Amino acid sequence: AGALPWVVEAWLRFGGVAQRLAEASEVQGGMRPVLSVAHHLTSLDGPLLCRPCTGDGVWWAAAAWWPLLALLAALGLLAARRSRTPWGMAGTGDAAPLWLAAVTAGSLMAQYFFLLPYAAPRFLLPGYALLAVPAALGLLRLVDRARRSVPAAAVLAVALAGHLAVQATLAHTHAGVQEQAREDWRRIAAVLHAHGVRAPCAVTGNDSAIPVAHAAGCVRTDPRAPERSDAVVMRRADPPSWARDWPRHPVPDTYKRGWTVSVRP
Image (cartoon, rainbow, N blue to C red; front, side):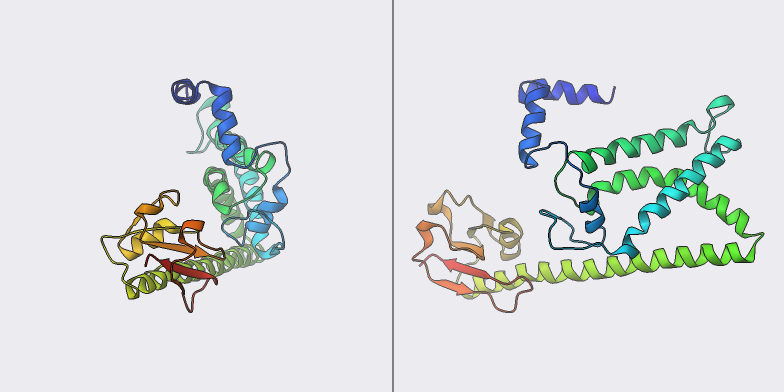
């Protein structure tokens, strides 16, 4: 039932299921049998898009999230099987909803682990959300046991505190990175304004052209339509041939280096 609308749309918009899959594969750089688990381990602490995933190692404190989640989910499934819980259904299917969540999580994550040659932390978020359901029950079972054992309570508290500390560190670090990267857009807009590019205006470029245009109060144009562009914003690249003679201005003090603005004379 869930696949039916997708199949109908595939025939109406793409000419068939095979054609839709082929176009989706092309957008992703070629989906194929590949083992990307190591890439996802690398991207647990960033970057937010690991493409390609080279030159970066695994921060094992962040990677501990995987065995911790798997352990809690397994405990939750075992607890639901042994007892009737509000999470399950009556009769022999007590653990069925939790197993459904776990199996669906596996099916969502498998395509990224075994078909996609790059990684991003956001790809696995739906799987984490589904595994959080049995994991929550597993955590409740551990809390019940910890109430009767001081050492168990101490171990559980340290594990959870460590996990929260790692996640808070990652959130703070990447929030800072994104804030500084987005500040570049305002710096580029300031250079555009300083050289007379103001609304109504049109800009194009090779990197982040849409948010740069928004920050400058302009619209983004296609680089193949030179007659419509008032400026070209490039990063670590020369402007297109039709704008090579335009006055070029570097953007100072940016988080990402190499921004230049070429303004129509």
